[in-house]
Image 1 (cartoon, one colour):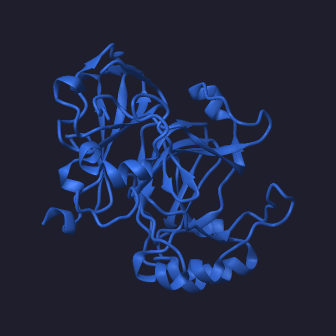
Image 2 (tube, one colour):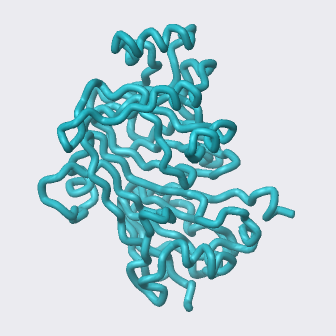
Length: 325
């Protein structure tokens, strides 16, 4: 098996009541059905029910799970050889929110197992914004649990949510336990723990694609929420490009002037924010995602045909305490 080129995976498209067709218009995608609303594209996924498959090259047809289990050092680097996760630890998506998403929360590790779910810490990088679009994250200053529970009864939950009017290029960190929602008119790159546990606490009184009210998880949500989380801010971009650095992922933004993608021996997944480039003969353009194998040498990582506006996210998995020993 040759690991001297980026690994590209076939997207896994998910219909959502709040989705749309921006994946077509912005990124030139061909969606499976010409009429349905698609809210998510799972770009890098090692879920049992949703496996990313390599679409080209000598490893074509291999799943991400097979790569993680059988070629971890070659593709993801020696630092992750002893990582305890049985599956690739991240799930990376594009979200197309044409309507408001439900107000929801993901369980922290301290309660997830007891609720039968998985913890999920995530981050959003905003790529497209319609005028007036909003993010909702955390509670307004001073809001208490009692006030929140009362608002659930009256349908006034949104009035207690802290909201942000973002711009393209903004980033928001969402540790598990932070109540949140994506407002209509946003396209987002989402990097998260490999989890699909979401508890909806309020859904704007909507019905699903089947015409029935969508299930709410009020009890689980209340047990998961951090009621001390008030008015979180957008992530500041550090001088070295870092956007988020936590125990689950490190994400930074890079630009055309970087000249190459990471360094030999490290794990690296990239998400193209703007522009285009080519690496080791593989062209990448806005909206493309790729895993850069650890075995790619520094010369093989040099960029060619880089557009002046090229920008991308560099996503890394930190070594776990186990793998660092």
